[in-house]
Length: 326
Image (cartoon, rainbow, N blue to C red):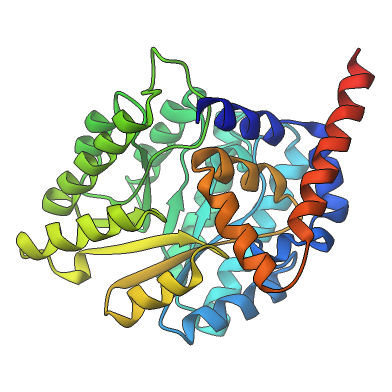
């Protein structure tokens, strides 16, 4: 498990593969897990989800930006998504990463970009979720949330269960709408649980705490064991279905997504779009390598061999990259 996780995280950071994915990704089958490269394509994907009773949280892919112009372009794109949500009457909100808006460039610059986004979303009563990234960006991201909370209430964030301090942060931010995840970055053992069993146990503890004490819980998992546990816990504790939702990634376990929505549970699909999909996808595989099987099964059901193409391309590009560094 650890070796597989490290492998996918290493792939997510490979610049050669990232560059290749931008050029060829959708042609190799990434359309199964990415809702297009344009706002227009994303809107059509979200409309299809909404028609099935499923909401969406939309992620304009990109992160770890180090140029101001790139951060400004990301802000402009996210503002366009907000206008599209409002203009098309979509049941959707925004997920974003502070590093995409300039957190690694300058804190105040990033804060100004995020203020503009949150203010525009607030005009339309659209919720903004701040995705949490690696540990080095954790506290600055919380600091930004604290500052924006002085003026806006349409924001929430993410708690990553593998961090030892997750309990403390969840309690501090329990009055926020919260997405609870296991965590998808490689963190050292002095900061985060390394064993899957420990992470899973903490994940359940956090979910139960927020269901009982929090404002609104977004439970992000593909694991039907966790889903069944939450169903039973909510029933046993008389927790209304209006107090929580299940979330899954676009293109993963589609049948289960529909099943949960049909059962009357709130359901929200995490909808990524854009050309910068590669790092996102590799971390999803690192987070839960079983996701590879889920995607492969859906692709093979469509009688394609795209995953083989992606795997072969990744291997060959990785070999080329390694030779260049030697």
